[in-house]
Length: 599
Image 1 (cartoon, rainbow, N blue to C red):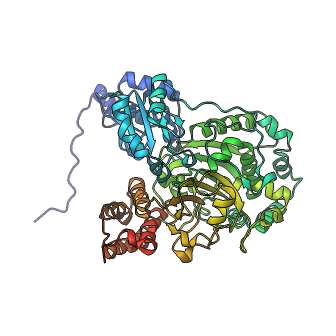
Image 2 (image 1 turned 30 degrees about the horizontal axis):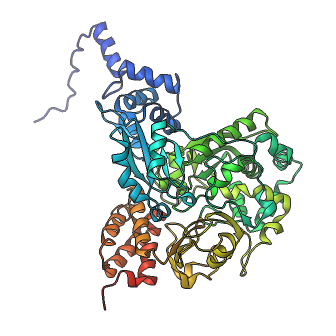
Image 3 (image 1 turned 180 degrees about the vertical axis):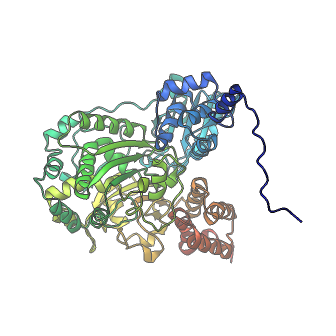
């Protein structure tokens, strides 16, 4: 029988003071690989002595990546130690983003990287031939890689040498830039004059523009009445409720793609408990889209004034601006504009931080962007809760696209009827169309909402390019589907294209001519989605790759592709997987002659 009496405790082992101190030292050390002194010194020289916030991990990775042409493993170990994070936490973030190059121990980075855009507009302009020729021409010291849309579709094909984009690039121009070491984006002059609202509707750009157009500087912007409205709202001279009513009456909807009414969003977030935050999406990764870059490069302070007005009306404590990494020139412009604003503020300012993306299309999805701002992998969150209730750092968050905020000043000062007074075919408002492809004058076109594709091309783009007749078009970038020329008279606006299996999204219009094939455009889009899937959910991760493989067949297996599309739409957790089948389905609906066998 087992005894139920408690046993006597064992005699305490004798432990020397030296052993106790050694144990304490071991427990105070990080587990796993330890940083070497040289790597730690190099990391500290770039990021400073700290302490460093966890949410700034991606910003710190950028400093290392820029300085050393990649992320060496030794530096990642040292950075993990500086932030008191596990190596796994740092590595999983560094390996998620395309612009971070993790370099194994003992290997050296390329002396220079050249990225050739293989987005649809650049592919139509000969990007593949450029990709095929450059490696032999530039030699082994230069890494040549394809890159998803870099947001310069009106200037296709585009090659980016380091951080310097080459417009209408050809092999000799790329070779010359590499030989000259021209790998930095040129600075923009600050003597620009730009006021699109005064000329609306109008063509904003006409195609081959300067890589660094002149921007409106702070002094010039203030001299023309800039920030007067923001100061009046902040100082209580302009009624916040009246501003909110003007936004609602204008009918302005989110111009990043979702189209949610801007004024209603302000009211929803304002009703949430404080502190409230704002996150501004300038990731603009949808292939075919370049409108936000166009406005930001030329007129950053009009956008920032919209930010200040929204922040005051909604009661925002801090603002985070998330800018895609491909926009090196726009980043310099925005950094300068923020420095000018903070040096001579027209009114009390909220805290404003500029965050740099790292090459991930998925971060255009609002919750994935918030994850990235928090220094994590850009993976979309499940809903509910919605970010208006539980968003950035767990706080109610007002999320907006750049262009939505860009129009705030003009809508309030000119009156909501000014904005809603534009429109055609029963629609209201203005839309900024990014037009590329087979047109004479590609660029950003500020046109009435509801304009048709045929009207847009003829009135704003100088007609079709020489030798090309309209065959089809993508009305909303890679996500929005492909429509045939027979539907070129459908009004382009929110809610008008859904009956045709399409949507306008960010209004990225890519025009196809009779020498193009819709199936090639759809395959280009699907390969893009496969490359950009975050991998979190199986229907998107596996579905995009499987669809791209099936779409390479001369004759498509329509039944299998349709089944695959249904699963992706129904089971993907975010818009990437849900919208990825749209171009493929459009081909089977409107261009079936391209993918069917002989009958």
